[in-house]
Image (cartoon, rainbow, N blue to C red; front, top):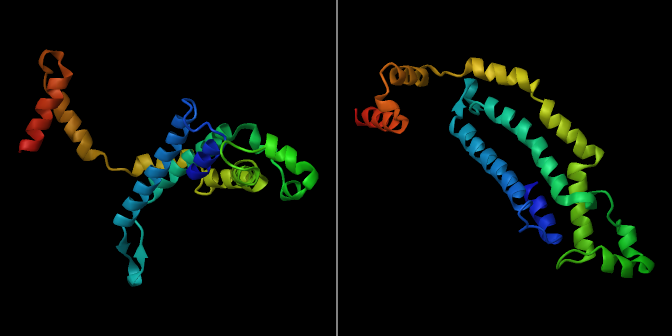
Length: 193
């Protein structure tokens, strides 16, 4: 989806706009986080009963993806604008009576009308069509209620070691209220042991 948004922004000449690049950069961030999460799932894989490979925990990744997939669709809609609603069909493109007008008014920046309209129709399928909307709803709900999943993840995560470190840190007076030196001294002590 990130690549489609990038290609649309290029096709309409807005990729370098200040209000567009950060949005596509946000999509790229989600894409990278997904890749890193998949690496973690693969790293946590282990042999299960009967010699069947089992992936590592996917709870956090699934919750994160349910949240971000809807945002990515929203960004694709924002970048694409009203072009998502009306693009020439293949029949329109093949119609000689319309062709001159389509070439003049519907082409993109440095791209012909066929490329732009096909790219937009792909984006329409991802973000606007009934299939795209169904996918958006599915991604959000297929793993169960997202709030329940977050609660279960919180209840199942082991924070004991981190909480013990925090309790150790705040069990002593903070020197001169200088937070930076407290953390520096704490990290130095912790890593030098």
